[in-house]
Amino acid sequence: MPHSVKFLASRLALHLLLASFAGAPAWSANASPPSPLPHASANTLSVDVISGNISRMLVSGTSVMVEVEIAPVGFSFTRPLHAVASDPDNVFEKAVKVMERSGTYVLALTTSTLLGTGDYQKEVSIELCANAACTEFQAVKSIKVPYRIDALSTASAWPGNHVTPLAAWPGVPDWTMFQGNAAHTGFVPVELDPDQITTRWQQPARTVSSGYSSIIASTATSDGQLFVSGDDHLYALEEFDGSTNWSYDFHSLPFPSVNPAGIADGIVYVAAGQQSSTYLFAFKAKSGGLVFKSAMSSQWENYLAPTIGTSGIYTDAGTYGGLYGFAASGAELFFATEEQTSLWTPAVDANGVYSYTGYLQVNDPVTGAVTHAIPDPTFENYIYEIGGSPVIGAPGSIFMANYENSIINGGGIGNTLLNFQVASNSIAWKIPGDYPTTPAYAKGRLYVGNNNPMQLEVRAESDGSLIWSWVPPQAGDIGFISEVLLTKNLVFVSTNLATYAVDLSTHSAVWSVPLVGKLSLSKNGVLYIQAADEISAFNVK
Image (cartoon, rainbow, N blue to C red):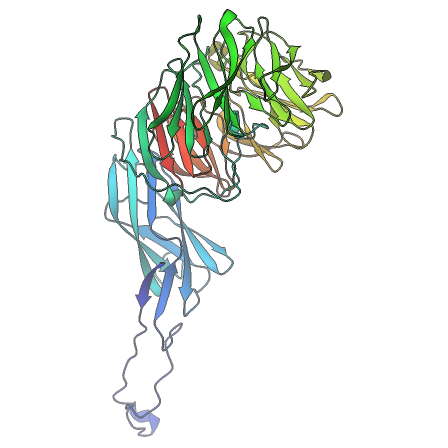
């Protein structure tokens, strides 16, 4: 229920009228009362706090923006409304930004960067003023809003588990492949309330595969399970509490290794092994039963999760680089030659399989025939790894960068973000920078981390122009290590120091934790941060 703060308009009883009023009688219970004070009425006045209590996690030494939505009841605010915040522990800055939205008002509070590590639980008082100096007040002078602000550092203990029943968002897909889906958009079509984010569980991580830039294996979710690769095993964990449902050990292979998993229609696909013992494995998601094991060629390489389309399963592999396509039965559909690189996965739609190894190549999903090949004039194959995937935007619009090149000379060489147009066999635009990880995409906008300058960039699909940007707040934030995870109202990124949630409307951080790693979000509303040391699960609804 909304938190309400009540204000009673007082009335002054007149015992005597001035003599100049010709001896009029004093006001009594039977006489008509005087006119009410401004904004007052015979009823109780109040301000409803629609947004509820404040509950946030943040990295100590940084700030987050908190929006408190209010509505006057029984009166109207004198415009413009001004506000000032105060609380016993100085958790919040005094300055409050006020925004009016369709009859309600949003008070934007900011936490102090001077806040030390700790769990703060009190009330913030917000004075509602009729002038900027706050010497005059609204009919309701102030409100109080309970808050819990958990300021964390890397030395902080895990705040505790909150293992609540799981419930799926209606119509929302699971995070089944690299960057969530076959288009690798990193987009989950939900709105999140940062006040609802709580810790669910945390477990030690498995040893994960890595390339030159120590890339951590991504996770995937399906029907209440989290799939994690590491220790030459594939693990199926229960989303509910992180317990292991089943696992598969690849140590029996002559050259064991394991890569991240992709899932579709109750089957889990994973490329495992190296050299002469490289295979695409398929398992039943619920039981771990082996469905098929199809041979591939390779050298000493790691791959990203297989991408599953309507016509097949597709993965990077090959002794000298290439693309494999397999049918759901495990039969090989094709092998297509590519430049020799590794640590990538294709994007897939109904029209083609899109891979990048120095040029954008489009293959027929069934035959493997090359339908388009668009060279990248900026490509340099320095370390024979790509470190990401193409992202499909509007039909025929593909985003890409040679992500791994961002690490060369500490980012001194950098790379180029490109937009390929398949229909015209052309590059629509290219932007130099230092782009280390795969972007996210939705509704004509690309969300991408740039290490030089260090900022999250939101760019227009049409021409690559910069729409807005956000700079991580800590001086030690020097590189993005996660792909971008996008929802309808928040964008999540992980740097070398922390994971942040940034509001798409205000362009301000609204939540953060001093944990870093690969990000995924299940249809049950569980956010995962897969780090080298632990897997952390958060409830987001």
